[in-house]
Every structure is written in structure tokens, then in C-alpha cells.
Length: 575
Image 1: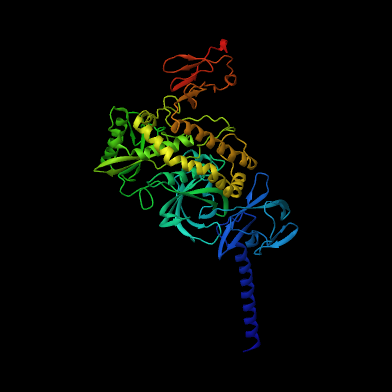
Image 2: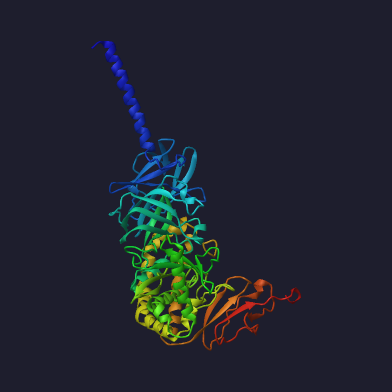
């Protein structure tokens, strides 16, 4: 081989190795195609052979926070820097692709990227699983289109990091109604194949419940766990997970089963599943009953006109039986499930009880359809949400109204039937009361302690979408304590009603016309004195009246039955 040919070969190999080296550096820096190149830096979390992307959150102060899942350690982090090869952390240059130094959690460290100075704080979750969802459109999670669907991969990892589903092919879309307005949005994930998730039964559809109205993240979980102990039929289960969307920590979610027919869900033998949506009107509802109850058909998903007529006739027959004399209602509904649903709603002070997110389904029994109450759903607005619950208003699920002229009659009608009240008392004393005893003795504190670290991170990252505005993560303990005080106060009233047999009346108060009605339970013979401060409405001497009779009431007074009072308009000269 002549000298010139050898020189050419050396030059060619030199160029190839140089290109390979440059290409290798490029791959080292840009190996995660899901990360926007505008991100100055990010991390890979390497655990048990799995690499998951973690993108720091730039907080409102302009500094960075990185939220690690329960199993994550700082020594498992590999730094990735976009646009340069290194950054300076805590006074020490760290090159892209290198492991990160082991530091303390919740301590701000200095960070320099180019000529800009920041702080970087690491946060660690505990005792909850993690869910990593990757979608092609990395801005998907802030979309305003709830019904938009995106192909995705989902990886559920246990809290200790030992179990992983691997990347599951799925579709993700928005979920919920009012919670979709929050920054922390709820989602539905539909897997391509049925799979058991976090110990729950195999299924394709799973819901990522944001609990955006619940600063404690505990309300729904408490009710779902109680219901699984209380109901003999299927009830929704839920387990917690820190959710990462395209590497970004999006908060603590409750991963729940979906209300639908199927294996590990409502029996496939169910004839239909419907949702009571009283807030809807004729043009929105699938069917409006004669009592103006809006009914939405959940199952079957695709139904024809004849099927809708059959479902409507069955629901109407049930409604009619509630208000006709006689005992036909006993042959139409499953009284046990309705009694248990009623008690869950009354215990939790569920604002939506008998109005929204209230489910029913029909099963054949002895040759005819029976309508079951439940499954229970959506309790993130229950258990009070006010600043102080030392003396909470404890409205009953038997209340007739939530707003003026919005009727919610089913519980009220059942409540007036002695056989139903007798069964409710029996179920409360024999079945629900022991579960509540366990909840207040150990269960509530165990749940709040287990969730605390994950809750702190969520509280810091995701402002609760509830009043009072201005919650900070420092208020978390007071929010948790407030729910516990509510539970204790509620049990006291329910014991008096369902074990001691005391009679209670409902007093509804509407401070503003067309406003929300607060409903209080007042023991028979006791004085009602919880009138709002009318001075807030610039009325020196407020007058409260019964909308049905026109009778005016002094403050305070002793109610002799259920009553709803409204603040009387006054001429300006009287104000």
C-alpha cells in the first residue's frame, strides 16, 4: 500500500472518529426527545434500570424546584443541560451526563446557568406511587379542550420503586366539570389493553382525580374506602400517585376506577347506569323527569331511542313510587344500597347529594328490574371547606333544596318513609358506626401521616382551587385538622339522630337572592341562631321570611319543622 493511500485512510478514519465523538456528545445532551430544548436543564432519574425524565419547576419567585417520587434518591439523578455542557451547582461545576451530588432535601442551593443565578431546591415524596405520562404534545396538560385526545405512554411505579408496569400504550383526555377550570386538571387514561393498576382490578379506563377543591387530598379517599367496606356491591377504589406529565411534576392525584359496566366494575349484567344531574336542563339532559330531575345515561354508551324510552320509563316509575302512598317503592329500589348511599352523603355533608354526580343502576332481581343507589362518587367538596368548622353547619342529605327553585326530592321523599328511616338507623348502628369509630380512632391520622410529605409537595406546587383564597403549604396542617373536627362533630349529631332517635329539623338560609343556600340541622326544641351577619349587606335590621307562607321570623327562633328563610328586600330609606 503506498504512502498516499495510507494517508487518505488515516484522514478518513480521523474524520469518522471526530464525527462519532461530536455525535456522541450530541446524543448525550439531547437523548430525551420529549424535553423541550427551551428547558435550560433537566434530570434523568435512573432506578432499577428505568430512566424517567424529571423537569424542574420554575416557581413564581423565578427559582427552581425539583420534585422526586417516593423511591427517588439524589444520587440516582443524572444531569442533562441544554445548550451547554455544564452548570454550576452549589459552587461546583457539574457536566451534563454526570451523576448529581448527594445533597439535602428542602434546602435551597445556589445555581448558575450561564450568567444567571437561581436557587434549586429538591423535594422528596413518601409513601405514594408515581405515574409518568408522556404525550407527543408537551403543552397538552394545559389545554383548554377537555375532550381533546392524545396518544400517550403511561408507566405506574410502586412507592418503593420495585414494581413497574413499564410503558403502557394509552390515550389521555380531560375529565371532570368544575375541576377542569383549575390549573391542576383531572384526566382519563384509557389503556390499549386491560391492566391491574396499583393493586386494583384489571381494566382499561382509569381516572386521574386532581382533588383540586380539596386542600387535604383526603376526602374522596376516605369515602371510597368507607364505601368499599360498607357496600356489598362494587364501589370505586382509588390509590394515590405523584403524577408527572412529560417529566413535569403535576401534583398528587388519586388514581381511581371509572364508573362503568365491566369486569371489576359494575356488573356486566346491569341493565343500565345513569347519573342524576339536577343542574342540567331540557336541552342538556337525556331525560327530564316530571319532578325536573335531569338524567344522563352512562351505560350503555351507545343507545337508541327505544333503549332511552325504556330507561326513562323505569326511572319515572321509581320517581312516581317515591311520592305515591303505599309500599311499591320497596319493590322498585334496592333499599339497602339507597340507605347506605344516603348515610355516606349525610355523614360527609355532601353538597352535591341527590343533585350532581349521583349515580344509579338497574339490575334484574326476581324477574324485574331493581334500581340500586350508587356507586358513590365525587366528594372533594364534602366535609366542609370553611376556615372554621368548630361549629359547622351540618346540612342533611334529606334537604329539599340547594338553590332556590332547584328541587332535589328523592332523599327527602325516602326520608319521610318510616321503613326507610328504620333501615337507615339499623345500617348506621350495625355497619357504618363501627367503620366511623375506626376512622376517628386510627384511620384518619394514619392516612394524613402517610400522605403528609406528598401532600406538602402538592400543596406547594398546586394552589388548592377553593376558598379561602391564599392558602399556602403552611396551612396544610390546619386544613387536615379542620376535616377531623368536622368528622367528630358530624358523628356526634348522627349518633343522636340514628342511635338516640332524636328529631332534627332543617333550616335553610339564603343570604342573597339566587345565592347558595346553607342548610343547618337543628335538634327539635333547640334555638336556631346562625343567621349571617346582615351588616355585611348594609342592612341595619334584617327581616327573614318563609318563601312559602310569607311569615317573618325573629332572630333567634325555635323551628318546628323544616323551613327555608330568605333575606327580605328593603327599601333604601330603611337600610
